[in-house]
Length: 211
Ligand SMILES: [Zn+2]
View 1 (tube, rainbow, N blue to C red):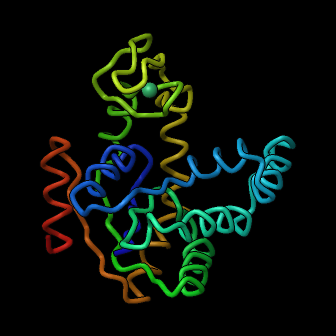
View 2 (cartoon, rainbow, N blue to C red):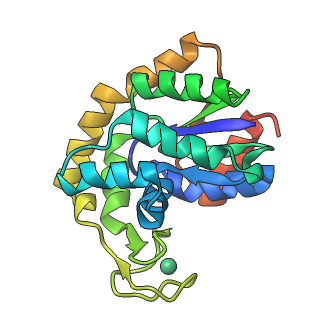
């Protein structure tokens, strides 16, 4: 089962992805992570991506999708995957569909985590992330030690209210049409109220997926 996890920045994708994946016994794949490892490992596409990043440019979709494709071709993804942050634009949705087709696969479901903007601004104000393993936390203050790896937990500068509102308006302009695209293209759409405890939201997602 290939699941695209969809939602505004701060809707809880990074928190829900591993929980949903664990329940479905499939791995997660976050674009940011595979991009970072490809750059670190110095793969041909990773080196290409680094070139764009070093110049301060956005890494083109074709390069990102190539990196995601290399990862998805690994056997551990053969039973399915929860894709986190892979699709942010309609061209990326189209690109992902074409790329999955080349692997004999398709997006089976799109899970949309729904949270009002004001709630996201509030959440981001308390969110921290491990500077080493990138695990997000809602309950650890900056400077705390990451329970997973011992790294230092930090506030990200792009989680400040101004930056969050800016990202939300970019989201509305750019990402909302992706949802419509999936509706038109027949993927199963699971719209989930993402207010509530982490476990409640996970359960709602699984119910919406028919699990
Ligand atoms: Zn950590």
